[in-house]
Length: 471
Length: 142
Image (cartoon, rainbow over all chains, first blue to last red; front, top):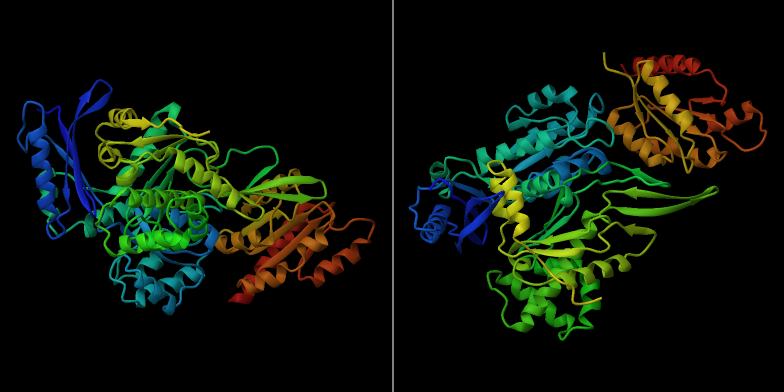
């Protein structure tokens, strides 16, 4: 039965898996399984799902007959604190690196790190401190001073040093009592983003220090392979699709989860045009952001606070009041394992999902500002231009199950018109909406190395395009 | 020895790109580590880049006649951001009209620029000044 391969994702709420078999240029889904994640012993849920997959295998199969890959959400995400120099330069590149490695930023600091500020970073309980600053052959002073502060702190996680390599050896010497991993400078020259090495370092730390215990060692031994952090699996799949499929070189993916909302985009950040100038860093082709304050369950109350204005306006045209939505969000935050109750709760969840996606895309996308001067007008672009993206994919527990295309299109267009001031947000203007109905994205992300062509084809062939009902 | 880094750019809403490219090529060939921010550069961008690259000098160009307004306050902002030692050079068509150059130079000196150049300056002269001034600053720091 070596034509079968199983993938299991151990999420924070559910452990889910699917069984695939190569078929032509793609992969066929032969079975799926799910159970609540067994938090004390993650292996228990894993093996339960694996047993289910074996039972659904065509013609029957025994556990052990087929290879298994797996991913893990790592207690809801790799927690990373970023320490950089200039906020719009190295610190922003550090954030991009952390997000693209599947991490979540729990705190950041720029310029000189004080002992007080370091204490603040530790309150976010980071697993990793991503420490950057200076171009190659550039700044040294603050980096060395900041290293002393980190060294003197009680931080017990791992420091990834990805700043100016000229002081790398001295930084590692100062941090000799900490666990450290050196990586290449994330910004070797002004505006140039180079995050591959730092991403690799973060992934190694994930494997070496974060995925031990709670039964994961047993799972690793059984699979004979290492897990990927779930968001990295999705990131890898998104990169693979945009790299290998000419007709899918620019698209976005949104995943509004219970605690966070993830947003991915592919395509050139800046396409250049007559009279448009890019300022600041050139963001990468494949970009991920994660919003730790936008969620549909445990993150619902903070989402409500972040998107209050949007939600107040929207509830004027809905069969429920803003106050009722507020009560719903509070209940969701208090008891996040509850699914949607009746149809009224579902309507509220849909609105929360629109708010989460619209807020996330505004934060992910760059902006364009018109500047007038004696000889005419120019546009200054900052960040990434998502306007050419004509496709949006919805994945995750909520979007894989609910038709939301019209709602998201409306929410994006409202978001665009609600932004005040001179800056135009560069979010997708019009898009076709596709749903990852079987919720395969996190699973196929674990197959990008073994079955690159097939995984990309399978992901796309299982998308359901929603027809527009409005406009 | 550490390469001597400098930051270049055309300040304000000025789009004159040709001279800027020439400056970049020239100073790179002279052995400086050049970060060229291109045209329409704000004061903040100059300072951000100078911090990250540990630049010893910022070379500001202005060709469209608004130099006095665009360049004002850069020295003070540098001090605020911790670059109290950085060299500031400025050059180009700095003001509109036929103001005698010594007068223009005086105004920019008052604003905290260490050297002020007219548009017809010989670039090797600028490079020689730059080496000398950077040596002097390095000496002072040690």
